[in-house]
Image (cartoon, rainbow, N blue to C red):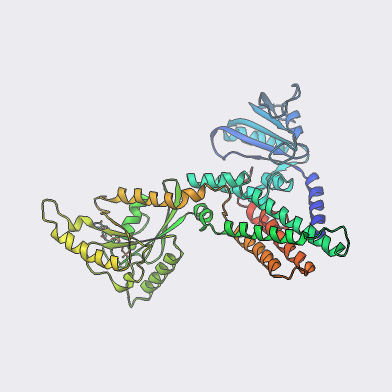
Length: 481
Ligand SMILES: Nc1nc2c(ncn2[C@@H]2O[C@H](COP(=O)(O)OP(=O)(O)OP(=O)(O)O)[C@@H](O)[C@H]2O)c(=O)[nH]1
Ligand SMILES: [Mg+2]
């Protein structure tokens, strides 16, 4: 550890010890069956002894049903469960207490007020319990990020991903890699200090070289993950594109089950991006409806087309909607078709009439299919948003696509979930590659490159100074977590 950061850590620890005792409602605010109030800090035990008086000492981590009284007035506030978690075996690593009381607003308010009357007790700030857990080395930065993601998880895939990270899925490999780099650094430093000495075994630098190659390969493999973790964390981005009046906004509304976008039979209705988040088979999907693609003299409409194009470039999946009522695909729409495009042939109800020969359908469809084939498009569905025909089949196929794309990758214990991780891993690789590019006798420069690589990994887990990340991270938490 660098000296300055070591001193910062010592200062931080001293500050940690002189913390005041914090308390907060940890369950969601509002009426509920049960409310959980948490207390953490050096005086936490007082929260018990002053409010739950005259009882035998409470065993750690056991639930006790007790009367809870105001420490000053002795007024009965509620009856509920109390828990005592002596540090360091608590979430924050400090002495902690929990009250599980009736979840009425007045009950919660009275208990919080009672705690506030105790000397050196104060209401917790946003994310302060988690920050204390981090300061006391109970959790590293990736675990805290996992915890924040777990609180925000909306779908099954997000829950699984976040839980694995909160349980150390990323911390373990990153710490292991960092320790290996530090070991290599130690050997290199020893060669710098005692290079001429007979105590240094021959071939130690060869061993370092082998280790660095192994580490570089492992990190490269880890980075080569098609961004599965990041995509699942923030949602699979799907863009719906196509000619004006194709029914793009109608499809979006159908999937969202609400009138998210304006629908009209005037071509060029949608100008801006309309975004809707869905849960498809446990996967979070962010679907964007876009302006119809066509050439126009209207500047506002052309701006819409520009936005549609750039949204399409950012998308993980591009869906092009083509109405079966037109047998020519406009050249501007043709441009966006490629073998990865999902194509929906829509308005099927307008070209198929019951008890009628469907030759017309076949001819229209055939003409479009020929044009799609030329573009190498393979995934094609036919449906009607008006009758709903074909919509379920399309949705089930989409879920299958998501499962086959992400399920295997998601089973991996360690997946990068944030751009921050990727950036630091790439920095680490630069250090390792630079080390490998040096002549073996350049030990001083080599040690410097290894230090750079180790620090890059340390920044992911928070083992080196990351104050800038901390403020952003803890502000995502609610008060009481
Ligand atoms: N019959 C029939 N009409 C449809 C279908 N889907 C959409 N429509 C109608 O087609 C018209 C255009 O629909 P929109 O959803 O606004 O089309 P859009 O692609 O968003 O159009 P722009 O925003 O102008 O690019 C509306 O009158 C819809 O009711 C369908 O499957 N069958
Ligand atoms: Mg529209």
